[in-house]
Length: 207
Image 1 (cartoon, rainbow, N blue to C red):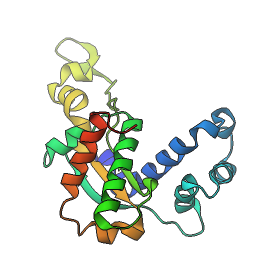
Image 2: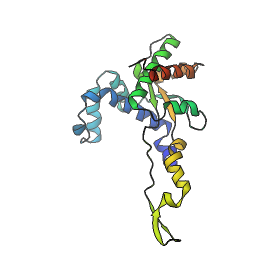
Image 3: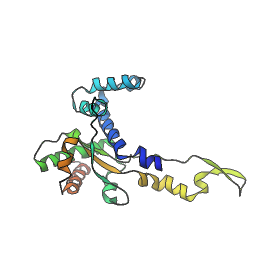
């Protein structure tokens, strides 16, 4: 629980993750994964930067691995317990759908501010479609003098693993480029604009 809530899903870690995800999404048609994942770290970064060039993916890769790191900033976040309606609208949706919503949201924000915001300058990070946690551990059960699965011994473990763990430790977050975060935090209608972007994607009004 501590590792997921304080490390794996810490907002700064997830900003970097969201940037790398979008870069991979943009570069996917050009990537040779078999070759790429055999490279060492420095060669892997160099290969990714060459492929990305100066296109939007290149800005994301440079923000992660360039001479001056520039991570995207958290604009807003939603939790299962405090903002459940918005959380459930965005959690466990296909990644391509999240990209479409982010692009639509970026367009609406640009129109609201009256200035350009590139599609890749708004990133969504949300719990994935599949839940990640399983407790595959055998424990000795003295009453029966045999080993049993931990989740069969403990209803608490079973509930946390299969029903609640992801919701406790993960958040839906919207990240934006550092150059625009200050102005966007002053927009009072963020949630309305976001809901409209989601509605458009759900209704198939965008690609």
